[in-house]
Amino acid sequence: MQLLHAEWPTDLWSGLLEMTQVNWDEEVNSGSPNRRQLLAIALVGASDLSFAGSGNTQRTVNKERRVFMEGAIQDLDRQRAEMLAELEKAKAEGRGAPLYVRLPNVVPFLDWDFYYVDGDLQWAPTSDPTLPNVNVPKGFVTDLASVPPILWSKYPPTGRYAYAAIVHDYLYWTQTTTRAVADEVMVAAMQDAGTDDATIKNFKRALGLFGKRAWNENQRKRAAGERRLLSKFPDNRLVTWATWKATPEVFHKGAY
Image (cartoon, rainbow, N blue to C red):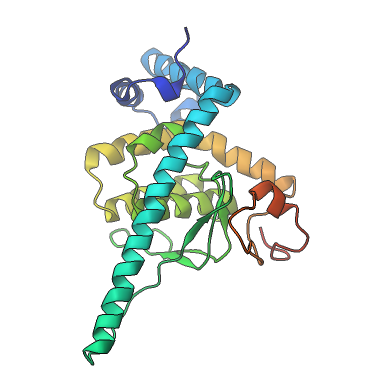
């Protein structure tokens, strides 16, 4: 029986990523990888094709993504509740209100396959001044497809990681930077979140192997007229993305 990549053990994936040590754009596309690298890439590529064609595996990935996002949204709600409690305490004690940066809600559509932010999400580099500031505007809709499916089980379900994934997805959708820069922003955001070096290393390699496919797919969707920036929002949670995007005048005019 063929192993699909959602079923592969973590140590095998780590081994494949360690084995390749290849930059997808610079080496694979130039025809220079060695046989060991080609074997690893072929194995990963075959699993990715299986993923794309398998309904069962797609459902597994969707379930992993939903479990992650449910945990992340709970974490955001907890942080927001703590901030509001501190604000109320400061008011009651006559102290100056603490200064907080607003955390936007990440709101799922009914099927939990697409999400939107109900406020601006801003990210700024703390260690690499060559990276751009990123502002994800209110109403951006994400399916988090820029993150390779194998990585969902490695994300701790926290709001900070969800935000990093959304920033990365935004850059992959708008393509206002190169793909390499978008991936570096993702890595930097993970470093900001205190991720260990070994995990970051595997993430970076996985993005190098799988990122181009997501990047090209976004180009195709945008060329076909797909839009991702809402001007109007559902008034209840019982609306699917498929229904809402077909609703007239819900997108910003002239935007992506």
